[in-house]
Length: 52
Figure 1 (cartoon, rainbow, N blue to C red):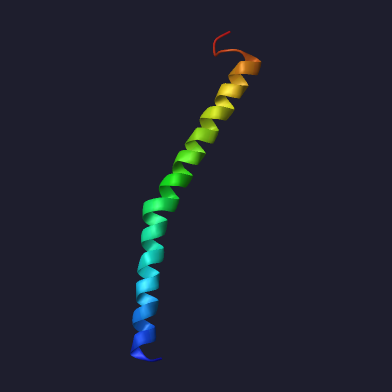
Figure 2 (figure 1 turned 90 degrees about the vertical axis):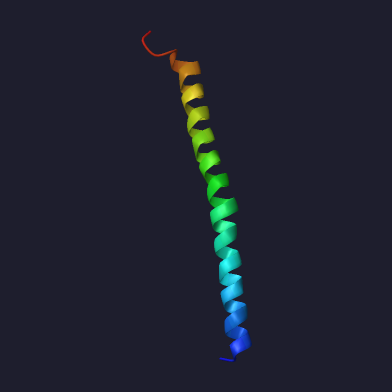
């Protein structure tokens, strides 16, 4: 492989990692926690609050 292709591959890999670490993982974390909270809220709407 020519050196330029290797350098371009490393740059692309770094950008992909930064996108995953700085954008995708935080967004997915917020979405999962939000979905869990929403499901608990809907369950309590149907079943009533805890201790009843």
